Amino acid sequence: MKRIISSIVPLLFLPLISLCQQHWTLDYCIEEAFSNNYSLKITALDASAAEVNLKQSRGAYQPGISFSNSHNYANTPFPANGTEQSKNAYSGNVGLNLNWTIWNGSRQPQIEQARLNLQRAGLLIDELKNSLREEVTQIYTQILYATENVGVQQALAQSGEALRAQGEERLRLGAINQSTYQQLVAQCASDTVNIVQADADLQNFKLNLLQLLEHDMNEKFSLADIDNVDLIALQQIPNSTEIFNDAVTHRPEIQAAKLDIQSSEYDLKIAKAGYMPTLSLTAGTGTGWRTGTDFTFGEQMKNGWSNTAGINISVPIWNGRQTKSAVEHSKIQQQQAELNYDNMLETLRHAIETLWLNAYTAQQQYKANDAKLKAAQMAYELIEQQFNLGQKTATDLLQQRATLFTAQQQKLQAKYNAYYAVIMLHYYAQGL
Image (cartoon, rainbow, N blue to C red):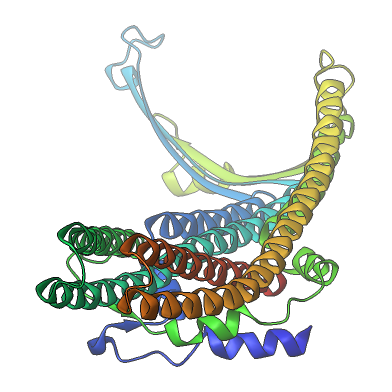
């Protein structure tokens, strides 16, 4: 499988072509989507917020130190001693206080859960990148198909115009009648309509890509990978079980679902912490002063200095079933996370199996339609010769021409269906 993947990678990610030429590789388009997508930028900010939350969780269990400084004024209109000086008094206090939760049951689970949330935020970025990669690849494939389809329509129109010119000459010579000639003229008009429609489809797909890459809608470009389509479309398809096993290891949504299970386990530990005691340490130092005494400011500051320290233990006894309910909810969420993980595995398996079947079927159809196209081409050339000899009618010729066109379209569709499915299988196997 590694040999197969290694043979695909060089075809997918060719060296970037100079932007001034505006020939875009698939790799360039994907990188542009990563650079300019607003949702991706917002998700990156969410990851930065998760990193801050982790630091906050760690800091929540560090000692809290605060400095206090208070000033108070008191007025006593009718003092006991009757002196004017004792009516007003000023006092102040300064202190340094420490409060530290030494232990509770939820400290470490909360920190570990915040670390998981940070990892999950990074996986969400990867998940969004995968989604963008797949969306860009789909539109890129549509442009490749539409580009080649325009070429097919133009080639048919050229052959139709050649038939019309021959018919005009034969009409002049009396070899065919006016009705036969008008059939050829009508087919040329139909070919022109088909070219216009094919080109409109191509321009619409290009606009979709420009919008996805956040580029100006009037920017002109072409795709650089069109010569590699056949080679990629016919690559040997790896075993679907091997792809699934690799995808389980690489896909960010699967890794995120695993982290959800671990996070739910920490939720349960945090909920059970409500049954556990809390141990905290308090300490402080400070002093104060007051006017209207016989002591000087310095003496008051010195004599009033005091230091305190204490240990507090809080043991929960009953809180109205809050802790028990929280534990039960956490167990339910844990079961939901496990079921979600299993469901995502099945969804992934189904997606890979469907892609694998699409790739295999498209490859078989491509090979069969290639043989069918060759036979239709030979049949058309034979009928064209017979038409020129007057042995076949214009209706016969145009019917065979329609058969040839259908064979071309079927081969084209099968080729690009295989191309897209093979690339998608590569994404599932390799991840980012």
